[in-house]
Length: 343
Ligand SMILES: Cc1cc2nc3c(=O)[nH]c(=O)nc-3n(C[C@H](O)[C@H](O)[C@H](O)COP(=O)(O)OP(=O)(O)OC[C@H]3O[C@@H](n4cnc5c(N)ncnc54)[C@H](O)[C@@H]3O)c2cc1C
Image (cartoon, rainbow, N blue to C red; front, side, top):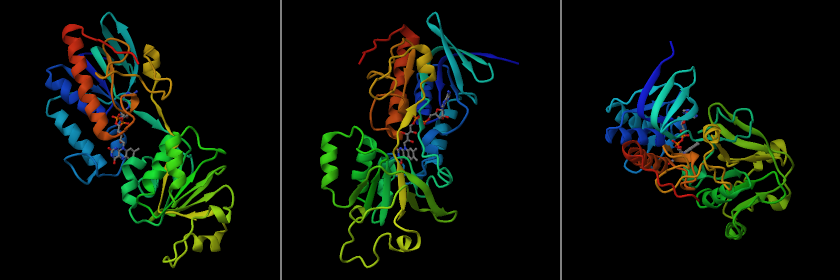
């Protein structure tokens, strides 16, 4: 039977932003409900998390369990259904969940994150965390002193990722299908051109991920043979030239790699923000929020990777935005306050 629930705050999501928002909202004595089908968000599939303050070297799934445990202590109910629609109803919101249940909420905090773009290649999801990564900020340090890694993409995140990765791995390929890199800042292009252990391969697609179930990713095949000047020069002290074994075996379209970073972008989940007509940042396609995580609609807040609150998309920033959103929701539920600062 369909049910209607009442709450001061509905939090959509079960990632870092959502659990932090629910924790703070519940501690402000707001009746709070979490609605989301799947647990943990991107942090839970991120593998080893080394940069969440206070918990060095923790598996992302375990970190999210800790977030949830803390919220469970405050008896915040979780409804395992995604949010499908939000309809303003006076100064409240009728929130429809998958399956038809309704939450009549005084305010809504959207923490629904982003959809990562993938290469769509066989074994890509199986080897995620085993040589395939989608976050160079997060995982580049794992490649300290590794022989070779690649970044796929042509935008800012990809160039930044290659520059960062080159501080750790001995050799880095930046692979992009276009004939020039797409919108990197000029300063980044300059830095990129000055780093000797980065090679940029343009007009190139990754056509195959190579590896084994046990080892994960060990290399890639690209859409064309590499020219000699595209191969990274081998330092004199290196006895085993990079790619040698595979070149001998398979030709010049195979590159041996310890890891590949797919930085092809991510699409913020905008179905509900668009339904509500919220302001969207035209440059980034993210929900525009102000310093209080307020959106352009009174009573609706957003936090985490969905928003343009920061370009640093990390667990720690998502969590802090969730906390801030809860404070703003508290002001709205108690006193109708909502002083949105447009972009
Ligand atoms: C491979 C990888 C490794 C990473 N490693 C690190 C790291 O080492 N350190 C670090 O700080 N960060 C890391 N990150 C980044 C970090 O995981 C994200 O910045 C963080 O998860 C963002 O949190 P969020 O709550 O905004 O979104 P998410 O974690 O993406 O959570 C979104 C939640 O919303 C849910 N949802 C989706 N649609 C709906 C809907 N309609 N209704 C209700 N719920 C919905 C999802 O199921 C999910 O629970 C990594 C990311 C990836 C992909």
